[in-house]
Image (cartoon, rainbow, N blue to C red; front, side):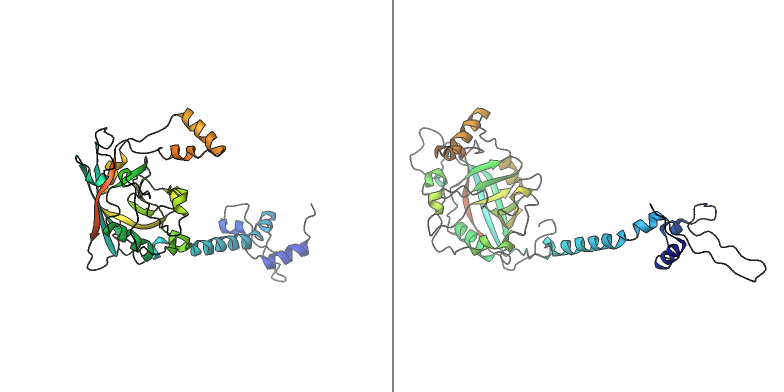
Length: 327
């Protein structure tokens, strides 16, 4: 390596008058960057020695602008990410759902074709009250409220439960005796399902109410109907967040009361297929066997028949903001 000449060192000292090592200068430090100048006692000539710049300082100083630029770019990127504190989560509507268990659903003497809503030995689990974000997602909220007030969800089966994550209800179909939903007439076309802003809220806490899109398991022939309206929803059960649901489903509400009911539903055992069955199902799905999807629909199904025994709207005289503990 070619060392810089005295002229180069002088020029460098003008460009960088302070070195990093000078910040740690101490009278007893023999490695200080600025050695004391030698004073001429005859006062005929004063020689001031140019400060020395270490090689390490010369290498480090050109890197500072790039580091500052990188940090400022990162700050700008963070500023572009929407904050949940700026999203309007005003609760405009309150919906209640009563959950129950029907022990006689699988009994052989059960009346053929009888709806779950008419279960003769229903065992109540409790009531859950949801608060809906009507200002943020007016279309999703309107359709969900219409399905509740028209009793379309009454007798609907909780057909999927993933331990420690969420449960799903509102599977669409014509079989009311199987706990399927028939959406009411008059639902609006939900354009929010293709709006990126509708996916800004995260599944960050237990009790999050979300329109089921990514985890929707409605039959394909139903989805291809021009008048199809998605009414399937999920509720996170905790204990932690569900980041795998973010960006795939629309969060439009939260549990206000009855989180203990959600927790009791989450403790119900579910059907888990053996490893050998999973292997054959994956192979059947690979070769295009439609029976694979039918069999997969039974996975993670609660072993108890949990259903919505009643639902409706609780009138809100004045919209309120979400409590601090809610998203």
